[in-house]
Image (cartoon, rainbow, N blue to C red; front, side):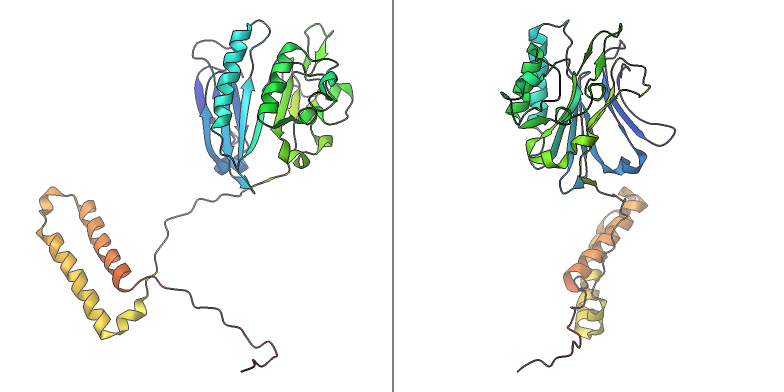
Length: 302
């Protein structure tokens, strides 16, 4: 994204933007843009570094955790790459076991069709011609975490497989990958998982999209719930007398307190608590009536 700092903001259209970057220079940085219809589906978003950020979404049948990554380029040494993967593994280890895990981003790594047989189940055969050293490291990470490189599965023309283009237009490689757990392979339609070279985004990278067949939950904010008590019990004089005595006793205890030491809101809350606790203890919650079988055209046998 190349934006400074760690920020959570809302766009003019109501979409939610989360991003994590360096405080002083316009380099690296990762982020998420969440459509306004699903803002309430965001459980939490964790900015980890200028190269890693994760987000958790409420979904069905399982919640979804997405990790966005930006791996070091070829100008960085192997030590920096290993440090990146160590940090990434720590993030993956903290993901709840039942969540659908998606790990995506710019890996600055080439996975080729030459790895298809050796790494079967981890990558497909629709990728680069050859695998480089960084691609080998990516495959090791994916294999260890039972992840599958989703955008290597579909048979598309080359322009829908490659994701990066050199400034002079001579080189076209696939270095951006979306990985999903192998157990959710059937939830990924390969025909709709590919790169989009026609998108005008002012970058030497193409957009990469994966379609995943899950359902985001429609989350609505709930107001405070009201407890319904079994007030019919108060029709019994004995129960009514016990209830009155209990409330009176708790009120008497409250009257002993020095009201000068407490504000009016505190006193009101204490009175409400006294009445509610007494009602819950003496009356109990109102139980919904049990459903009975209606006349279904038969006579029960005795």
